[in-house]
Length: 101
Image (tube, rainbow, N blue to C red; front, side, top):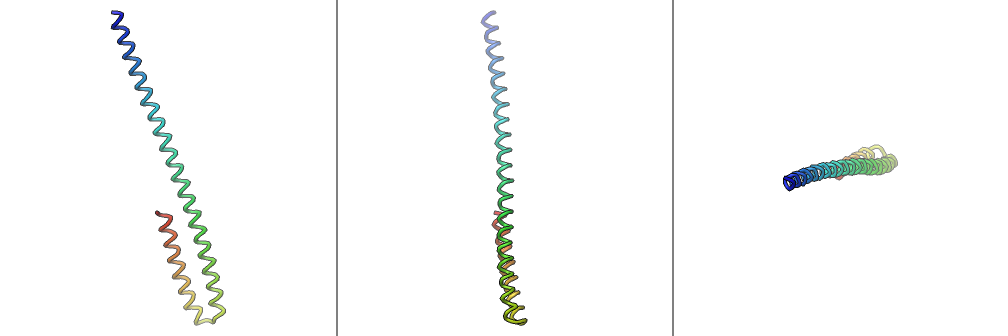
C-alpha cells in the first residue's frame, strides 16, 4: 500500500511538472510572439521613415529641376516638368515597392 501511495505521488508530481512545463512553454511562445510583433512594428516604422526621406530627396530634386526649367523658358519648362514629374512618380513607386518588400 505504501508503495502504491509513493507511485501515486510520483505520478501527480510528474503531471504537475508537465503542466508547469507546458505553461512555461506557452509563456515563452507568447514572449516570442510579442517580440516578433515589436520588431515588425519597428521595421515598419523604419521603412516609413526611409520612405519619407526618399520622398523628401525626390521632392528636392524635383524642385531643383523645376528651377532649371524656369531658367530655360516656358516651353522648355513644360517639357522638363513633365520629365521631373515622371521621374518623381517612378521614384515614389520604387520607394513604395521597397517599403512593401
